Image (cartoon, rainbow, N blue to C red; front, top):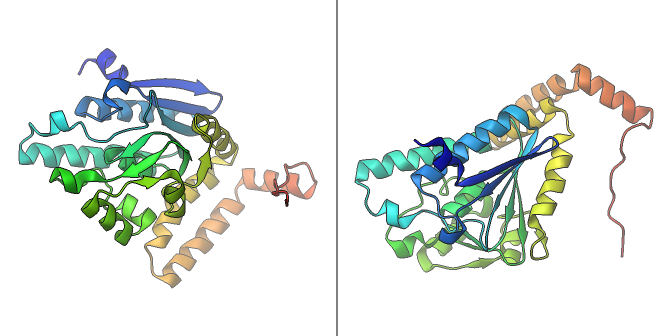
Length: 264
């Protein structure tokens, strides 16, 4: 694959300890092709090597309108399976990698775009964002991990509704359904996502790794198994040299205090 052609599908910049990956196919509403998903993979790998947190956002009017159907319609069944599994691997690198990721969402967050957003750890949507899974109307099925990740965020019943009826959810509905955790004014999602990523980058890397890897696995465990793993992780992280220094800073009132919301 031509590396220059690959890189043209994404932009990459480093802002302090935060890597920013921009989906850069605005003429196609950032629809994801095979080359595009490889560009995302390369950018994520680079970020893991030089950043402590990352932001994924979209150039143009939309975050991502999903799968490149013009490419997909030409595939054989086995090529479709292989393509789906590649999406799983790349998006899994985001979800189960070494650094936390924040998605900045605007415009279309549709199909594969929602699957990509669902692989990140925090999602910020501006008020122009809308969510949809139109695969049912396209006579196809989700293939980028949506049946696992998106369904776990919003629940099987809501996802079934979206796929069967073509229902489109607004940013406000998306927040209620847990598809995003923050709503901001139009054009402000990237800035908010960067703010959150900087906060996460300031955490101890060991603590972040525990949150990213232990917390989702605990949700899949039986209650007592989850509590046991929680105890192990709590002890493991709290007894590290960095934890000792940070706890001492808190006790000596040198650490940043909680930003408690003000009452109206």
